[in-house]
Length: 355
Figure 1: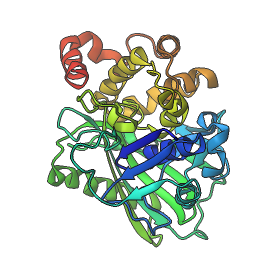
Figure 2: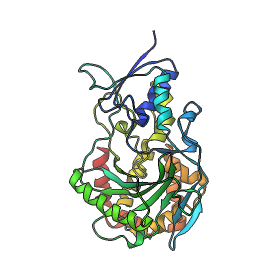
Figure 3: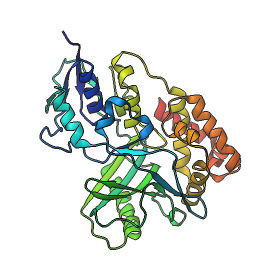
Figure 4: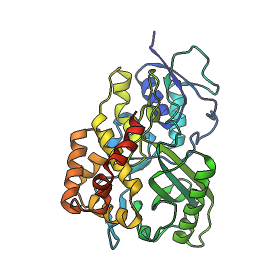
């Protein structure tokens, strides 16, 4: 008799886990009252991962790889990164769930049923929040450049007021060009009204970037980073703390550890997680000019060092990347000053998310 895997929640990470489990012979049941079994795009939002994170079993679930550019530094300059990027193909995921026999129940998990919690990270005021407004432009209304943009920090030095500085993320999708004005990490209330004030500011910044181009639809992003569910039951995805607290990414990590999870192994990465918590806190405290310059130094590092911080789970490698940054920024860089001027404040903020 095949081993049974029951999932509570069916977001992108748990859908990938379900597909992998079914491929390996598990009998999979997923409960999620919000899941639309008839939709070809069952998950709200657009999801991408670095090409290096996709295992062979998931290759068909992602679009073609694209190069990534960044616009960073002071003054801003454009450079192409040494690794590719691929968007999740939601239609392919929905088809794979059907083809592998995953049973989807669009209902609340019944009481008393033991399941893996895949319900996402808790939305709390102690979280670092990644907030973004994305606008989809018609496919023929292409930008002047030929590659996608991972981060465009140009203009961030002019962002002022109560709303944190932001960068622009640009991707060609099946629904047109996505322009997304993104706050990488900020302290913010979990209340919808407070976040809506941030979204309004991001809409204004996005309008400044794209001018009068027609907008087909809007996508809002609100990711609580650095938090995880505290109960002792098995967890996966954002509920288990997979969200990188310095980038907001979690899907790549889910791909990398899916087999380990199904084998009953505990994935490591605790040191990397803590170090990134510190990095995320420093990002949330920096102004636009500081971030623009800091990421100029970060993306001047070699590709291996960049990926170690952006996606790797080796804490020593993450620490090496952070130390290598010191050679470019020096210890007096404004990005690092909270560590020296307000060390206990930084420590308390990080501890609140870890405890």
